[in-house]
Length: 218
Image: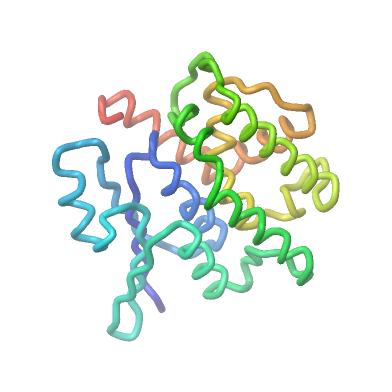
C-alpha cells in the first residue's frame, strides 16, 4: 500500500495547498500532512527540502521502495484521480469530463487580478476592497462559469458537475475568497458555496486556519 505525504503551506493563506487537500480527502486515502509556515525568512529553505520548485503543495508517494514527488496542485489532483478511480474525481461522461477539465485548467491559469486583490485569508472576514475593472471581470467570469455548470450539470444539492470533482477542488479557494470578502453572488451560487463549506475537508481546513490565526502563525 502506498504511503502519502502532503506538504502544505500556511492554511490560512495557501490557496494552492487547499486544492489537493480537498481532493485527497475525497479519495478517502490516509495521508500525512506537513505544514510549512509561509512568509518567513526560512520558508524557502524549508520548502526546498521537499521539492526543487520550493513551492507548495507537494505530494510524496512512497510505494514499492520508491518515492515519487509530485508538485503543482492540478498535477497532484490528476495523479489522485488516476490512482483512486473509485473516488470518481472526474465526471464519468467523456464530454462532461472534458468540460470539467477545462474549468479546472482555467482556474489554474487565469484570474490573476482576483488572486492579487482578493488574496486568500480563510479564517478572517474583511470588507471587500475597491475592485478594479480586471478584478470585477474575473469575479464576473467565475460567477458566470459556476452558474453555467450548475445549470447544465449540477442540482440544488450537488456541485459543479453533479458529484464533487476536481473542478470543485480547484475552485475551493475562490469560494473562500468570496466568503472572506462578502462578494455578492446569486442565490444559486450562494447555495453552491454553502455546500462547499459544508464539506468535512473544508471545515477541518477552516479550523486549522483559525488555529493559525489564534496562535499568531497567520
